[in-house]
Length: 217
Ligand code: AMP
Picture 1 (cartoon, protein in one colour):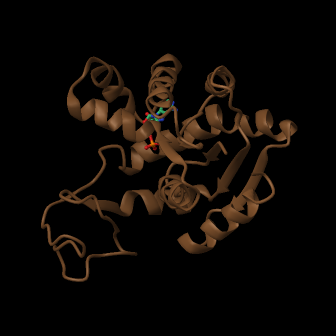
Picture 2 (spheres, rainbow, N blue to C red):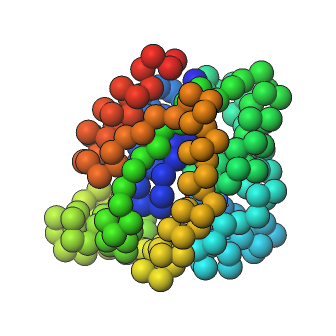
Picture 3 (tube, protein in one colour):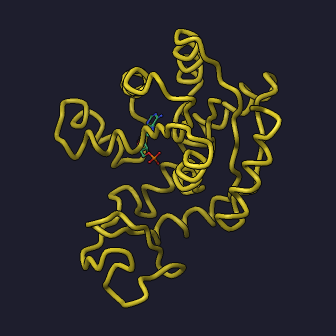
């Protein structure tokens, strides 16, 4: 089964994709994670993408389509993919259809996670993570039990994403509404679109996603 998780930045796509990936043995493909890794490695692609990401704008279609194609080939034996953060434009959605068809696969379902903009700004500007193990935290919703010490690994260094400031979050939301939301009109008529309430807690959203997918397997 191949699934796209669609939703604004901070809707919880990454968290839900990891849970669903484990539950259904799907390979998670996150273009945001791939791009951050490229930026950290200092590769040519990372240098091209870094400035765009810091402004909260979208990286050119051909770069992310290339990344996804490469990863699909590396994970060619996967029983299915869960795509999080891709596609983000109609051109990317069309490319995804072609990439899957070229590998004898197809997109089974698109799950849209709905969250209102002001809640997203609060969610995103509060989030931070352990620099050692990546455990995610949130100020004020999920602080480490011992202040300044990671619950999972005991690390004492924490990091925030450079694009999680309020100004950049608002730019990312604008990009979502103008460039990504039209995908709802692309997938709706194909009968692939399911919508869940992304405002609920993590477990409830996961249950809703699983219910939305059942019957689409
Ligand atoms: P994310 O982690 O999905 O919120 O992505 C972080 C940033 O990476 C976005 O704000 C974009 O600048 C860039 N990005 C991630 N995925 C895509 C994509 N599919 N198309 C264009 N830009 C992307």
